[in-house]
Length: 376
Image (cartoon, rainbow, N blue to C red):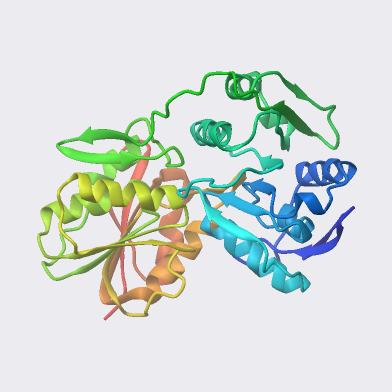
């Protein structure tokens, strides 16, 4: 655990989920740069309850600004949990902080808007579009990120929705973006949610969903090799995205109970939209969560998963490994975890170590579908 030193105080911050021997910090130079700039603005009592923080990953911005009772708007359930976790760790009072999911509207007019850029262009534009409607004319929006992620196209999006946009000088390889809201610029209608079809199955995609323009090739391959569930089976679509896997299983199984789980608010909303778009009944649950934390042990017959290999900009298999470990606990004896992954990720070795078995169910030149069963 490391300490962030800012003009607003020093804070010990942890990344969630907490890992032993964590080597990555829970903030970056872009957080530091933004906090230093906000300190120069000398926010006063008139800003209390009027500060909007967007996409704060682990709470660095929110804890520093807690006295101003910010609203924290994010597509990540885990980000909101990180704010609570790190507030408790530092003894920071966040009773006035409001955690607002990206699926809920902005129903107040902030005087200060600060954001970390999401690394999903569609989500960024959707957030800018919503901001354009919500904030008063003349409001300054300040965004931050590492300079390598700020492109000409990024600035063009800000100019499209807000008007003239400038950037700061680079500091520790980070930059700030400054834009002033101009209400005379015509707002554009959102193309989301967008519904796509695949083999007669309708899939609803909100802006924050992976592969929201069309069904990705990995999922398309996985759909051909999903397990056949008994009619009364309990099935979990873990990391559900738009719900393609669970919806496909439900369409083939008229009685199985499906549980859709993702840490992205927009993904869970998309999965629910997909379920309804296909005219399915009320035998599904939809949950935003950190993997399967809190799920009853020995409760599921089948878990299907297309695990992510990154958390934000951090590439690695730690999220997949957490999914595998928790799946083992949640599966009933004899239950199956079936996953898809890129061939080079080596999931076969991890699953065999955890379950004591792993079968290659299908493969092509890029993907492999693996099956592991919890021993009876």
